[in-house]
Amino acid sequence: MEEYKPMTAESVQELLNKAGAETMARQGRTESYSAPRDFSFEVKAVFTNGMELQVVARQFNYREAWEATGRVNDMVDVSLLRNGSYLPLPKGYPFFQETDTEEGVDEERLKEIIDAVRNLNPKIYLLQELTGG
Image (cartoon, rainbow, N blue to C red):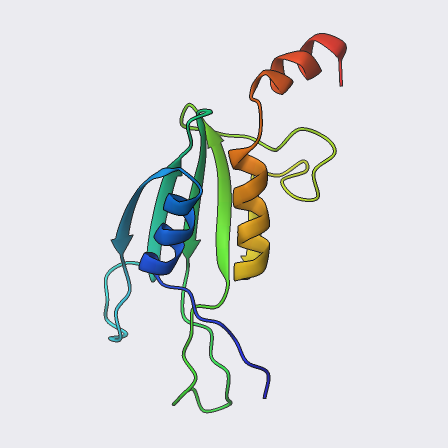
């Protein structure tokens, strides 16, 4: 069976904090099926360049047929925001192209996204708007 690296609110928050973002996290669904929220956890991050990421683990993934063991959050959905509004990344990036949410992101891909957003100069949006790109 393939090994999946589970993510938690704490582990995602740590990745974002190491990248220099200010973060907030909240837990949602618990081990109980009657938990009121439809997500396991949510982490929001704001980088010094004003770009924001919202990372949400919607639900547990199950790795065996009877759903008795193997519950993990090894994939998350990641949304990109700026000034509280959703937006795609400028052209040339391998993610957030014509969409503001990447779904089913594993930890390695999340690290790539964090690095790209952290290093983005937001002035590129203005430049693309001015040049029609």
